[in-house]
Each structure stands twice: as C-alpha cells, then as structure tokens.
Picture: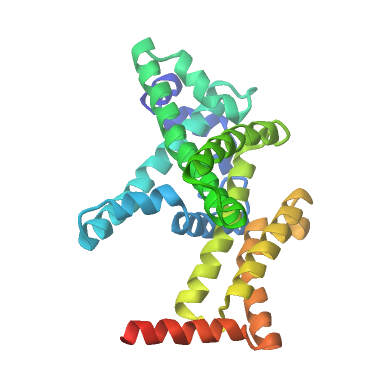
Length: 277
C-alpha cells in the first residue's frame, strides 16, 4: 500500500482522473453480488478446516472468541488497503488486467521487500492449499477406501501417498480451464456454504435434519451450484444464493415428504440414551 501511495501521489490525483464508481462502497458491482459474497464468505469461514484448526488451537474458549473477534476487526483495514492497491494499479497502468496488479508494484519495490512479500504470499498459499489437500486425501482414504477394502496399515499408508499425489496435481489441470480466479474463488466458497447450511439446520432446527436429507442436500446443492455457475448466473442471480437455498429446500421437502429417516430417529434415541447414562 505504501508503494501504491508513493506511485499515485495519494487519493486526490486518482479521484480527478478515474470513474466515480471506483470510490464508492460497491464499485461497478451490484448490491446482490456483494450480498452473495458476504453470505458466502461467512459460510466458508464456518466450514473451512484451517480456520477451525486455528480456533481449536487456542488455550480456552475465551481466547478463541477474542482471537476470532480480533481477526474480524483486522479484516477492515486489510480490505481497505487491498481496495486502494487495486484502484492504484488501475490508475498507474490502466491497460493491464487486475490479476497483474501485484507484479506491477513488486517491480517498483526494493528487492528485499519484494522478496518478503512474495515469500509471504507463497507461505499463505501453502497454508490453505496444503490443508485442503490433506483434508481431501484424508476423507477419501478414511470414508471410502478403508471402508471398502479394509487394508492393512502399510497398504493404507501407501494408498494415502498415491491419493495425495493425485489430489495435489488434479487441480492444476482444472485451473487451466478456469482463468477467472476471483470468480472461481467465490464459487468454491458457495460450495462450502452448503456445508454450513446443512450444519446450521442440524444444530438449530434438528426437526428438519436427517442423514439422508443432509447427503442429498449436499449432492444436489453441489450439482445445482455448479450448473448455475457454468451457465453464467442466469437472471442475474449469483450462484451463492443457489448454494444457500438448495440444501435447505431439500432438507425441508425431505422431512415433509418422507417424514424423516426412521433409522435416524432410532439412532437419535440411542444417542440420547447413551448421553443420559
């Protein structure tokens, strides 16, 4: 941000020569899109593994609550700084795409500072990507491979390594066909939002929750959100809203049409009995 401020001379020169929407709260985006992003981000935070790990690693519930509030407060100045950097990049180099804004400022930085910034970005990417890759590999091994084949510990370790290799390289193939990184980022948040919706319904409205409904809700939400995203968000409705309402509709209709899963009720009674003992 300091480099951007130095290159532009501050906000006043940019205001004089750039469109007015660059300095409004929503820019060129619609209120519906911003609302969808807010909902999706909140839902993604609720179901993102490395965030849950960070919260769980604190010393006490009070420390977890304080650190979460501190992180939320810090999002405000960081967001404002990122917004200023983006507008400054458009002012300094109006011909380039927003994706290349960061390299523009790195070129004007001291080599040592540029190295620190680049290393920090790589580290942050490794934190999130490695955690997600580990979670995917673990879920595939524990929930599918082990239950199906009952391998020995040695065979399970070997297959975990191969599955981790596939999980690590497969996204590289898909990313070549989806150049819009920002849109793809919010699309993945929409998918994680579905998980949050199912979890919240199970916690606060357990009458409408069932294992079968949860599975179908997640499956249909994934399919509906993906199709909506590939169609380019028809009627101006962001795919985030599809991810929000689909699992809820599936759970409600599942309960109303089939009156829940009998096995769920039996299991719930058993769990209640065990807790009472």
